[in-house]
Each structure stands twice: as C-alpha cells, then as structure tokens.
Image 1: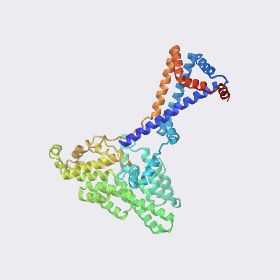
Image 2: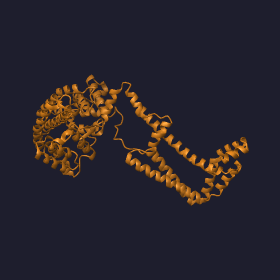
Image 3: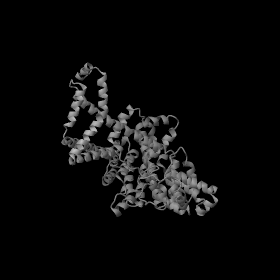
Length: 523
C-alpha cells in the first residue's frame, strides 16, 4: 500500500512539474511578445491600446492557422513521444523532467535512498532481493537436440526465445572459455563456436575442433545440440568426461603457477561439473533414477562450494521421483537456509512434505467445523510461504494455466520459474493424495490477486500530448467551420487572459512617474 502511494505521489509530482514547465513556457513567449511591443517609447495606455487594436484586427484565418499549427506541433510531439516510448520504454518528457527538473525542485533520487538504507544494516536483505531479480540458469533445463528440437519438428515453431538463447551463449562463453584458449587450437575454435548464432555453424565448428584434438567442450556442444536422443547425448557426454577429466587433472597441478593457469583450472572445473551434472540428468531421463541420485551426491561432495549451479534442485527432483521423502527432508534442512537464495523448488517441496502428512484426510468442511490441527496448520503455513515466494506456481500445479516447455533461464519469483517448477514437479504433487486439493483450498483465498507479467503502461505525457493534439485539432476544425463565432470566443478568451495583466500594468503606471516609465521602455 505504501509503495503504491509512493508511486502515485511520484507520478503526481512529475505531472505538476510538467504542467508548470508548460505554463511557464507559454508565459515566456507571451512576455517576449509584450516586450517586443512595449519597446516602442509610448505611454502605457498607448501600448495597451496598440495591443487591443492588434487583437481586434486579427482575422478568422489567423485563428485557423494558429490552431492548425498548434495541432501539427502537438501531433509531431506525440509521434516522437510514442516512438521514444516504443524504443526505450519510457517517456522522453518524463525522463527530462525527472532527470533535470526534479533535482532543481528538491527531488530525492531513489538510488541514494536505497544506498542509505543498505548502509543501515539491511545489506543481507538487499543482497537477497538482488539475487531474486537476477536471471538464473534453469537447473532442470532440457537438451536442445534431444528434447527442445522435438517440439520444432512437430510444430515448426521455436520453443526458445532469442533472448533466452543469447543468455545461454553468454553462459557458455563465461564457463567454457578463458583468455588462454588461443594457445590451444581446438579451444580457440570452440571459443568462436560459442559465439556463433547459427546452430549448424556451431556444430560444424565442434567437429572441426575434434579433428584437431579430443576437446571436452566440443563434445558438450554436440551432446546438447546434435544428439537427437538422450542415449546419444549420454554417449557424447561420456566422451566429454574422459577428455574433461584429463584436462582438469593437468590444470589442477599447475593452478598455482600463475593467473593464466588459475583461469584454466577454473574453466576446466566448470566444464567437469557441467559434464557430470548432465550425465546425471541423462540417467534421470533414461529411468536410472538411483544412479542419477548417486552421481549428484558424489558431485556435491566433490565440489561443495559450487552451490551457484543449484545441483541440489536436481537432487530434490530425483529423490521425489524415488519417493524418498526422508532424504528430501534432509536435503531441505541443508539448503532451506535464510542465508541462501530461495527458489520455488525449495519452498514448494517443503510445502509438499508438510501437506503429505495431512492431505489424505483433509476436508475443508471438517476443518471449518473443528478448526485446523497443528499438523494442518503447519502445512497451511508452508503453502502460504511458498505462495508468498512465487504466487504463479499454483495455477500451473492446479492446471488452471497450460504448461509449456520450460526456458533455459528463469527469473526467481516470476512466471518463468513457475513454469520450470511445475513442468517437472506436477507429477510429484499428483502422487501425494490430496496435496493438490489442500493447495487449492489454501492459496486462493489467502493472498492478493496473482500478479501478471508487468506490462508497459502508457506514460502520462503521451496521454497528455494526445489530448492536447486532439483538443487543438478540434479547435482548428471548429474555427474553420465557424470562423466568426470562434473569433469572438478567442478575443473574449484573450481579453480575459490579459485582464489581470492589464490591471497590474495600470497600477504600475499610476504609481511610477511617466519619465521613469519612458526610460524603462527605451531600455
């Protein structure tokens, strides 16, 4: 509520700033016009009579031209504002007013307030919010060649967006390359391959690298994009493991000999972890779930510090498939920590375990009569926490929204994370009797309406310019159709507008001596 009020006040302040700017611009040109007329050394009464005579001599054609020109200028401003908004997502006038005019009026920058808040002991919460807004690699992302391409073969459509694939290309360049790749011909070819946009060009480059040397990253690319089945991908990953393990052991012995060798070792470590993880996921896809669990556990023991890969989420999904709920609880106890970034997998898996204890006998009618037991209250609170973290998930679990293939990258607490979670965990919720019923009875009436992906709303200044353009165009049309009547109306409006100024000028003339006013007009 406070955030909404703050946003409304900020928008109101921007509107006031723009309105005052517009009014002062109009008055500036009016004053310039008056100064031009009053620069003639006449008495004030003569100047006012000159202005009045000038207004009386204006023809309706002048008012038509004036309103038409105003409409044209407003339309050009509207077109420019709309183009700027479509390209940059914000209003140009609003950006100028916020950036340049608000500081002059004593506005406060949000960034400075955030920085001051972070210096007051809220650094942990700020880091948590930053990590949630970061785009993360989907821990359970599918294989492009063996899984995503099936959708393309059937429908002729691409399941991944260019933005998602560009993020993957950046990940590949970050984790699979280093500055010393130019010293090894095969790695130099792969460094260029990860930057290629065309899939066939990437695959050709990988085959070219394998002709030179046994290159682990070349096998990774072929396993991900060329293999058409999971079995073929697993064979290529096993070859990649053999090549990658040798590179890892060699770089491990030389890692302390300089920054170059340390970078190579870091890259070889990332490659080895990626290969072992994908091999475990291949085993999971092929039905060898216990083998996959063992591989994941061994990988987490061998590289305990690489929690950023979120391997524990793969482990949780495999353990749920085995219905090893005690092991799932043990993993949650280790990773469901306040210092670690949350995820929908952790929150909703914890809720599933709590719901499993009471869902088979849960009845909304009975609960409303006798009240909730302690176990039911714990389950409801766990679902509340999960829905509070990501409110998009329940509609996918309850099949109120259609599932699509999960993306390769997700946004924590967003719709993309909900799709990725429900795609793999819906079967686990269905397996627990009554769990979806408890979720349906709990989430809907407790929290606010589920937010949707934020849409770009039209800024106030585009609406204001559109209204101004429409108003001036209507005036031009009315002036053209009824010139005499609109001329009378314009003269009356201008007379009313200048009435306060005439009154002030008469008072000034009565107070100041005529010789002084004569000297001022000469200036």
